[in-house]
Image (cartoon, rainbow, N blue to C red; front, side, top):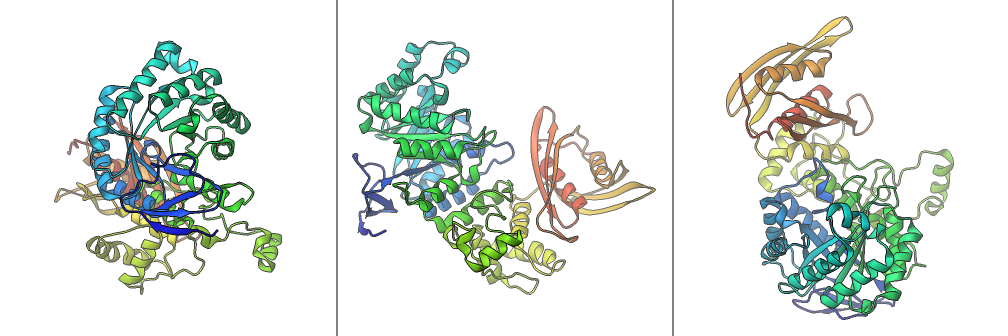
Length: 537
């Protein structure tokens, strides 16, 4: 695609009067492009995506992701829900300082205090947006708000007008729009646009809509809302029935110009629309006259970073970024690919940042090779942290293996990424086997003080955890215990994800080791380290 680049300092990519089909942006560069309609990518990995249980990020990690999203070419970053917690408020503040050209968006309910807090959190953002709204389906109106349509309409308009006092760019979401009567939805959308909304978000909150049903809803708004040309229509689809991507593409083709997505499709319940799928569908289908500003070569690093920081593995057969996405095991497929790769591959792996020519890491690899591979995977460390990781994690693991793969590295980073912990595993010794009652001895370092204990159990892992329980005197119930192998082989690195409950609260932990019993103990201790108070014997 031919284009010309013009440098425009201090220019916000979304503050352009319609139509915008011939404009595109990267940083402060304005690109004059073909007649394909420009689609704005609104990433909510750090808000909707981070609501997944066990995937919460701290502010430093959120900044890492935000900077990666900026490199990726995302137009809008929904940085958080400031009123929900001091941590979310602080994250929005710091992300606003850390990135330059994307619009920083903060979510609110249709409540003045929410909007006040969002405006305060956005004070350092170069380009800021308040995202406010309310449920519009009869189900939400009746059961969630105990209200009626007219009152909800008034609250929607009041929220937009109130937000408009703080920022020019106001997005309104009609929660559960997927199940909202189209005529009433059109009334609400028309009213909030007249009140000053620059973007109207039409969420399929429950993932219920069929693609044609969702597309018809967008077309109805385009055709029946007076002043719809003064605002951008946005899609926001959930994957409860596996149709988030199909619904989003259908909505964009029908007239929406913004889509709300997450890296790897992370999000509540079954997740949100995956950014990488939308970007590559649009790139791969020249028959769809749409385009985005996404630098697709950054997709794989962004996927790996989010997976690692959230300790949330990407399923092997996940479209675009799964480890099998470009793998061929069938003899017929292999023969076809060897003759002409296009027989079974519609995407060049390099287009999404996957390079077949990888540096192989071994125990003889130096700091430079490790740093290069980590950065390729989207993991950036300070020199001090890299040195610690190299000496105390990488080399110890590499000594046990012939080579260290990308998945191994990401798992090791996930196990090593946490802050300094209160409780550390000093040693673990387990005796088990057929006809032998499993017994485990455990040594813990708790704030510099040494503790030891031994116990039996129904298996080696149970015995090890029972030994820890005799030291940590607190009732703990394991709610979920998942073991995942990374590659193949008897010396494979295993990952353990654990969910425990204690005193009515749920905690999540992660561990990785070539010894699955050790990985289980590390995951258990990761949970315990998140307890506010720990009782010792």
